[in-house]
Structure formats: C-alpha cells, structure tokens
Length: 459
Image 1 (tube, one colour):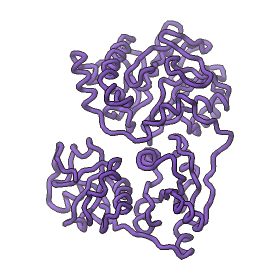
Image 2 (cartoon, helix red, strand yellow):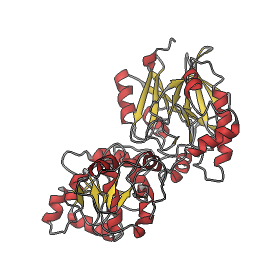
Image 3 (tube, one colour):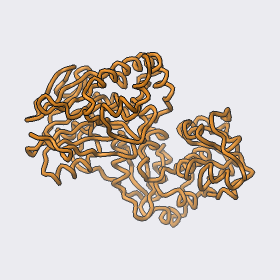
C-alpha cells in the first residue's frame, strides 16, 4: 500500500503531555501505538474512518498512564505487541530487537532502545525497504530525550548511558525518517519538556542539543541536569502495566451522593476533591477539601497529591462533566471513586453544613504577606518574586508545617496555588490567601524586578 500523511493520526493528551498514534493500514484495519486507557478519542477516530484496531503496540512499560492495549484487545480483538523483556503477565506477542510484524503491506520492526526504561522498544514503520517513521516512545523525543531516573537514583546514570547509545542508533536511520515520540510538551517524562511533538531524524540531528553532545559523558550530564520532579503515582504504574490493567466492560460512572453520605465517607477516611474553578472554591468549599480544578492537568495533580487507596468524593460545579473526572482518574489507575456531591455546594449548605473560604486576592492587595511560590523548579528559576519561599506543589504537603501563617500562595494563574492553599489550611496554617495572577503581576504591582536563577528560599 502507499502510505499517505493522513494515514497517521496523532492523538494528543495535552494534560499528560503524551501522544498516542492510530495508523490506518488501508484495508479497514489499524495499528495503535502507546494508546492510553482513556480511549475515547481513539475510538472516535477509528469509528470515523471505519477502522478496527488490529494491533496495539506499547513502546515501554508506561509510568504516567495505564496502557489501553488490553482494552483494545477486548474491544477490537487487537493483537498486543510489546517487548518480551518487559515480562508482562498477560498474553501478548513478545518482541526482541530486530523482530518484525507483517501488518499487511507495511512492516513494524522492533528496535531495542533502552534508557527511559530497561525494556524500551522503538517501532520502525516500513513500506517495503523504505523507512516511513519510527515510534520512539520515551527514547528520542523532540529536541530532547525522555528521563532516565524513573527506576531510582541508583539507576539514573546507567540508564542515561543506555539512552545515549539508543539515540545514536536512531540517528543512523535516514534523515527523512519521521520521528513519532510518545512524550512531548507537558509530559513529566520529558527531560526537559519541549513544545513540538513530532520531527524527523534529520531535524533532530540538527536541532537536538543532546545529540550535539561531543561525547557520552557530556550527554549524560546534559540529560540528567534537566531532570525535575515527577508525580508520585509514576512509581506505581509501570508495575500495574506489567500486570495488565483491568478491562472495563462499560463506562465507569460517578454516583451521586447526599451530603450525609459525604460526611460519612470523610469520617471513614475518604478525601474530598473540589473540581470547580479556583474562584468558586475560594468563595466556599467543604472544610478540608482540596481544590484540583477540572482541566487538562487534573489527572497529574490528582495522582501527585492524593493516595490511590482512599475513597474519593468530588464536588462539581454547573456544567462540569462527571465523565471527564472519571476518565482522568481511571487513566492513572484511580478507581476508588465514591461519587460526587449531588447538588454541589448549595446542597451541602442546605443540609446545615459549614463551609470554608479562601481569600483570592489581586497583586495589589497581596503585598506585606510572605510569598509562597508553588511552581516547578524550572519555572521558579526562570523568574520569581524577590524573597519568595519556593516549595513545589508536589512537595508542599510535607513542608506545610514549616510554612508561615498569613502567606499568599502563588503559581502562574492561581489554580495550583489554590490547591496549595488547601494543603496549607488542612495542615493548620491560618490566614492563607491565593494570588489571582502570577509573579509578573505581583512584581509589576509592587515595583519589583523578577529574580532569575535559583535562590535558597525554602522554608
């Protein structure tokens, strides 16, 4: 078959920063690569083209989302393709370096590219002898390479050296070969994250600073210097994917709960997540609840800040889709979803319950308070308010006892800061406010210049 550009359909999860791919094989069948458990977009694309997914390939044991390969086997009868070295605990076609799968006109060749994980494969898509493109997963990504510290600090350098050789191997492909990575902008698996999602081998040889490293040691230093923190749930999902996620036989639902049921669940150890916009949470919320606004990054912060072992109760606002909450939770393995408060906060108050409020203040009104910046390290060093206390949101719960009372918590817009305020309030900090804006707004309002570079301002 001839392969046209529209035979490849990228499916981008902007919240997790990852791309899955659907390849139209030209005969009503399709190949899916690195599909996540939330298959709504993939099913829609397949249905619109009249495709059945015949093959579901995973480049590696994903740490940031549950694989949808087993679900595609259930839904479409897809053959699951994955590294034999991953020792997956379910039936699949285990592939080793150089193994090929005849897709019916096209061929998929496995290339061992360890580094991001030990068992990592890239998949080279061939039309006869012509290299069309390579699904590089968490190996070569646009202008970077995926991180090598997910198996622990004692393995980071070893895997970085493996990543060096894997990338060199990939650059031996023809320059015109397309590069189709899984990880991209917004992914915590990137090191550091970039903005573009696809490229070519030739473009990467010219533009990727890691490929410009003159030797292996320099490559390792450059790669590991860009490693930031990553969500806590990453430490659980690779093993969950090795075992195989549970197959869903229907769309999971989020039951409605009365205020009385919510009280009972929280008394028994359940956690309340308020998915409304930050401004609505600020105006009134269930005491002890945590604000995680329902947006593309919802799953990341849910998996970073909350255990997967506690029943979760959600508070939603008008027009919010409970199904979006369910899929964002399920794609990272959070299935203990007790339900959502029926009627929202009006029903909570009508039942005679108290609410808490959090001040949401403008930059002009935020002066005179300790300033707590909860952004990532890379954001902080790019520009922060002089004297700001810096604690990444993912670490704030552990540092909350040392944070000052009366602080204004800030990020870039206010969503993460509102989450941080909830963590501080739950830890007993008082007088907490949230900045409606970011450091540039605060600096402009108070006649300051932002500080660039690191600063020892942790509490």
